[in-house]
Image (spheres, rainbow over the protein chains, first blue to last red):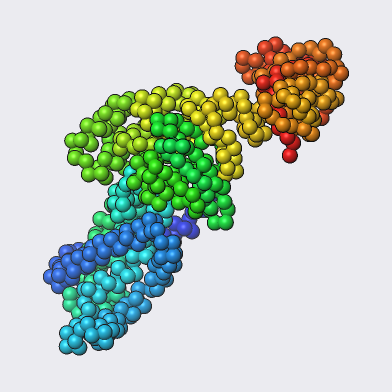
Length: 274
Length: 359
């Protein structure tokens, strides 16, 4: 048997899996987006934009806002883990910050639903403490609830990557800055962060793509309009059997994540070329 | 004692492990002191304690009479040059050098002026816009030095700054650093494990062993008058003999042995008796063909050994011989080579023979 054929046979099973489970459904979903009553057309897209352009914008804003907050919190936590001087506080934080990683999105949604509702745990605590009157209680189960859920769930993931990168930079670069008189916040922003910015960017992009694909959180927390397009897609299929518009929304979502993917690929290419 | 930088009875623990066991050190203004020792002797710990990155559990550190033991690193008027250089990879050479001034809130124009001055001083004019990744080892080392000097510290601390350089560059950088230090009149403390580096660069050498100061002195003193067996060995007197002898008046009488003559050497204040450790350097002896059995000779002002050449090599300058004295071996250098198997006499002048009580 020629060597090329053996090579092909060896990769064939993996190739078949990729082809059948990934490429074929993707292609059929893409072609399905342009399928209007059996003919090629942009009908699904005009309909999707007519009905859901508000939701598309809503999704983009929510995910970008969440990414920004995740970035901020992960830098703060990672920075404290790296530069904190109170060994016990650092140990406690290191032990505790990863917990949300192991909680599924649906459970996060459920927890926050009971926590953030109008008569939920958070408002009850505020009322009990006398910080708020029962009349002033309001529900956070809207865009704010989604952002809280995303940030709560994704910050540990980005922090995990970031804290690892921060721990592996040359610690004497931090001491050199201290030696010249830099305070901790300044060291974090001017010395540590610039050395780990690529890791932060990669973490945020992966997190962006994850949030774009979450259905359970918007369904649990924000079952109203506007909502995220994942919920719209589920609704088109479950309530109307309308695969055309669902596919069109899927393609729009894919376009958003591919912008992130391009940034990610360019970043990794640049790292490899160094 | 009015030293500029003073460490008194500094004790540092890592966990239950005592790394510095009560170290005293006094450095005058403008002096260049080398902390010399093998790895794990506590020299870097001592430097980091001076710099303010470790706080000694006991003892004090004073600069110009002011206690700085509990002050943060930047309030001590010191700048540290790190072994790894610790340059900030995302900043250019100019930014690295100017960062300390920027932190002190110096106006931009003043920072630029000082950075230009430092670059001129260190021959870095052409590299201001480069990042550290695009510099050679020697250039990085100079940037690290420039970054420390830019803030005009009273004391410059150097943590093995030459150990990451190629051997050839290291030799020139040694002289550059000590010339610069003299020109600026800055007080410097330099950590190294390289004996020659310490000898060439420093005004005074502090030899550390196992968390304690073993000896302090000028390069000439520690080289020619080691006060302990450890210092003698560390300063290159690796040849070790077991002798026995006793002191009478200002003379030490060494008893003859199977491989050595009986000898009388001046005591120079030493009181020795019983078993002795004798150390000498291979290059400070005279090698000759054996003229008679050493054990039957009686020498004054030197000691004679007799042995058999086992191995020769030419490291450059002198021939090196490994000579067997029964089960023991010593190394001796000579301008001419002796054949393997030949019986030879080794004559050690008393000034080159270091005697210590055997422990």
